[in-house]
Length: 435
Image 1: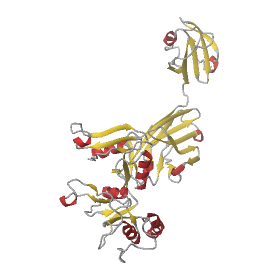
Image 2: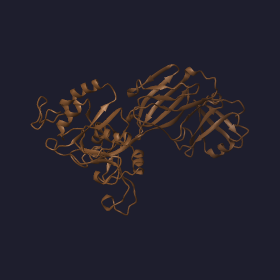
Image 3: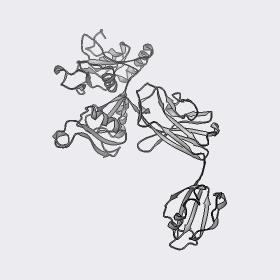
Image 4: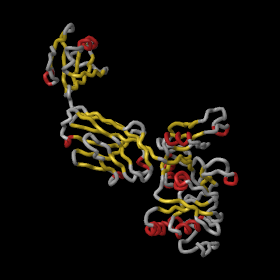
């Protein structure tokens, strides 16, 4: 029979008799006790104070499994996990809600742990940070065991322990990127005991719909992902799109999100966008086939390390001339995501249409006026005109870093950017020396 002070080790492969129940077989595997018998409920009734209250904490996992050899057909195995008192449990505490920063900033992902007993050797405590995606994929970020540390992948040189005292497992992420957005797991382990907590890293930014020159609904998931990256952005998450909808985003075409779902936000219901009598909200097509199905994309971008500006000129230019004009000004033609970020964070307001890097024509409006495209603020889109013959202004982007190095890189990139119809050593007939 069990008595005070009985340990799991002393119960290994033993037979005991419980009061009012009879003989029971116990098989102890590590810290688990396997109990066999026909009436498990009777055994559960015996686990009452004062018999077990100071011996162990018992957790029942009610599983239906095959009976052990020698048992009757009615026999069932039941597993009881036994955790001894003062087992050295680790308790992890992380921040509720979200921590918020912007691209290029620094942020602390808070995580603290309590350990019993408190005099545990710090060299035996392992801290691990992992990024978790919606598809339950795990990406290693940081791990430390005592004074030994390792940082993984794109986080190298950017992630460090905060080291704010005992029990602090927080990490600092410097030079935050768009890809850093998401959910992080903080795991603290000491020998066989561990606990985890989660921190959600959010970014200040803006969501924008995107489709290529080829037209609407031309992108599968992977092409949409590439399209956003090429425009200095990433595929938006559902929460980012929902926040954009709360801020007034209204778009009638469905687009990919980063989790593989297809959605679109409607602030003003109308028949051509899913029926007028349907309520406003984010319409959801669910998860679609990433290879075969084609939609637009919803991209997300944040603050930039640089500035977008409209290049002042005396005459309008075609696309190739626009590329050269920005380069000669120490810049590059701005990407779509950069123009949206400038509209959001620079409050760039310009009522002049200009070329962007993807060959589209757009302009940003912060203060709406009738002659500038309507009553709502936003980035106006005039489509993808003929690159060779249509003439517009141009929006350029200049990094905040050393302009000489930037200009040198831009010059090298020029040949890749020029249209095939134009030689890199010649100018079209309508080009002037004012470029």
